Image (cartoon, rainbow, N blue to C red; front, side, top):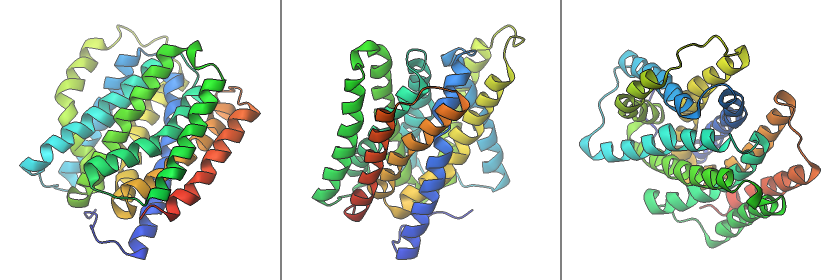
Amino acid sequence: MERTSSLSTPEHTASGWVNGFIGVVIFSGSLPATRVAVLEFDPVFLTVARASIAALLGVCLLWLFKAKRPARNQRVSLVIVALGVVIGFPLLTALALQYVTSAHSIVFVGLLPLATAVFGVLRGGERPRPVFWLFSILGSLLVMGYAVSQGLSATPLGDLLMLLAILACGLGYAEGAKLSRTLGGWQVICWALVVSLPVVAPLTALLTPASFSDISLPAWLSLAYVSLFSMLIGFVFWYRGLAQGGIAAVGQLQLLQPFFGLALAATLLHEQVSQGMLAVTLAVILCVAGAKKFAR
């Protein structure tokens, strides 16, 4: 596994979009899986348990490939990544999914491209063209407009938690992508998991239920998915894609995530997906092409 080069070529950029797309497909199952898991697991336990499992796997990967330790000036960024995507986003979404359905929460994921792009400017030094922001903001407004039309005040706590989760995730994405340019995509998420291990491992032991006899197979499979795929494998592709193709540009692929997530929510969880929700999701997806064209 090699580090991601900072050079930008057409082939390099195309690889970034492919890697980013794979990452988005993997992440699309995160919220439905979390929704299943929190029905039987405590949300805080779920957050620290998935991070602990992924961190142990990350330690194995770092040892197996004899990865170099991060430089001193990279450690603060790793802490930001850990707080954003290892602890912040999983915890906030797990708490939110006690109040809202996975289909409802997935709509908020449409805000992630805008959040990622903003933090890409603030932390990654990127400067997309002005028209890019038009498409990115339009997609976000479509998402929020639909949420408000469905009664945003009906679950104010759940919606607030989802908004905070999006901000934490956007920061973690942008910071990790910037760091991936020098440290490497898979190394970033593995080291971020290692950074979080001294916190999440003791909490996992402390919060472990006295018995797991009442936990069903779907809940166990959901825990396995969010630990292995959402917390580790997805980031290997995602961070590499962001570093190769640009944080703001490839980040717009997240507009596809609601579409995949809604399909999973409907097929696996049998949640109702309205025509309005599908229409908004499709309209948001159309913004990807425009944002991609004017991202650089």
